[in-house]
Length: 118
Length: 110
Image 1 (cartoon, each protein chain N blue to C red):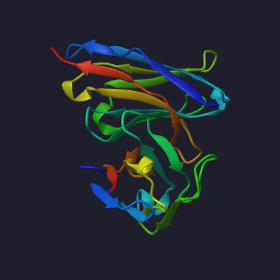
Image 2 (image 1 turned 60 degrees about the vertical axis):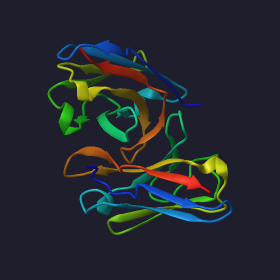
Image 3 (image 1 turned 90 degrees about the horizontal axis):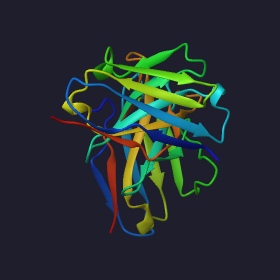
Image 4 (image 1 turned 45 degrees about the horizontal axis):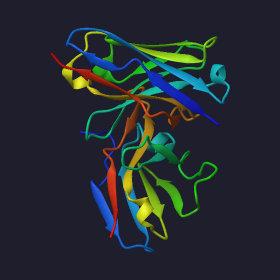
């Protein structure tokens, strides 16, 4: 079955960087787009980024454009989220998810917590 | 402020039916597929409905989805206490070139 597992979260000071990883299995990773979605404590879901199956197309929510970069390594079945210039409002559980053909998330993992605080 | 508008909460008795609405615009719901997600307390969201009205394998037919114009609706029949959760609609917004979610609806089964 589809499985994704996120890692790399932690506590980081404002303005610093962090890289999240998401290891996928149970499906043909190299044929699937992948999303990052986040959820701040006690808040709703917020879509963050999408990368196409081949990495050639990337999309971001406005609030992270220019600061976050999504990438993937199909040889490792892994998608990444490089987060620079972090802000306190980026504090959330970050989850990755396989993409449906409709460009919406399908199966996603438990997530990794990112806390931005001084 | 979410791009998609959902009621903050709905409630109904066990065995009854409930609907959850999701309102958007022509740049999102009006021209793209809608998905619905269930998030039980302390767990990751789970896909309930995709492509407006399709259920993934393993999702009971008590859950249904529909779309009309710039609005979508999730229906749940034969409510069970185990259905208490937060429900989110999601779609692609062609103007933003981004995914968007509703603010979520908390379902209480009284």
